[in-house]
Length: 135
Image (cartoon, rainbow, N blue to C red; front, side, top):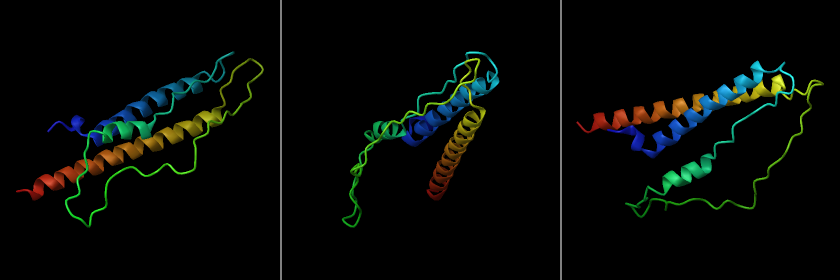
């Protein structure tokens, strides 16, 4: 069985790849915290909503019982996403790396990575249980 063809595994792999790449970029920021005129970098946020939507279009949900809930996506509601810009200070030598901010982002990235690994483990375990019960 090729697990990379299953949507949940592809999405988790994309999240793991993004987390690893972001950790590398944030580590470079921390390593250059004393480099004059160094500008902190970050990756564009992984749009998990669009990733999930693109994967969910491949799956057709079917109601096999009238008591089952109908499938579909919920309405987004009255809330809209808003992009906020946080101007941070820079040092006298032009360096814009704030170590506390970078460490916070690293912790956040580690949490996202751990969550993706746990999700993969749970789904693998679920597949193992499903294949054992068929014997």
